Image (cartoon, rainbow, N blue to C red; front, top):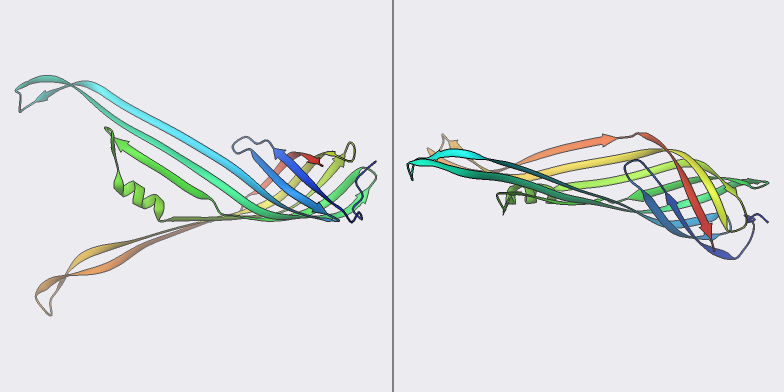
Length: 203
């Protein structure tokens, strides 16, 4: 028996969507044709570089071994809130439209020879990320609890970077230097299409 979109009671729902770069999962609650849901994507990365060899130390007056290293670690957490609306039901297939908004949280650090770069740390703090998705899809219900879905949509990514800095300038009126504040601002927007397959469970 297929889930009817006219039922008045609610169902919890859980789904996963495998991907090449980011896998995602969501948890929602179905009431009639509406499914508000919460999702989460996580991306973590690490990078390490090391250079070893020998160099001449002028203080010691001899050739000595040396080691230089740099390490990067970062993570991107992407929670999102969305709403799915089932448009039409035909046999075991239900079509739907979906909209969600996301607020990514970026963190990361770089260490040079074991010492953290504080400038990079401040740069990461000044980055603001937002995202959104609008999509259309269908779900095929094998029974009233389990479905396989396919979805196509448009994603929107927004990145903004702002960093205030103090700068010394020469004021010819006073003949002295003075401190003024300048701000670097950078914006980046991207709107790629996407497609995905999802496994959904209603209970």
